[in-house]
Image (cartoon, rainbow, N blue to C red):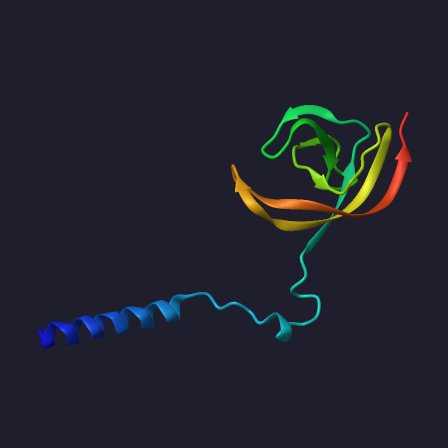
Length: 124
């Protein structure tokens, strides 16, 4: 009986040691350079009208988006941009903060939070 208890204890200790060595290290944010732990920001071009679509996190009107000025075609963007107020007839260049989703739905791992409008142009 004692032999079995000792062997079980040794196996438990060995598995804890292996687990501790393989677990990812979480960085101490206080020791990182000032901007290294900040969340990602992104610039987006938002089109003058919204399109009907059914998205992962939004049903109804989706934004038309270009990732940069060189992109020719608009993409459908089915995610809400928290805090952004779209007015039809205007093209926007905005800055958003990309944050991890609180709830992962159908593979959507990011949420978008409006930071500021870089430009707003009336489109005919």
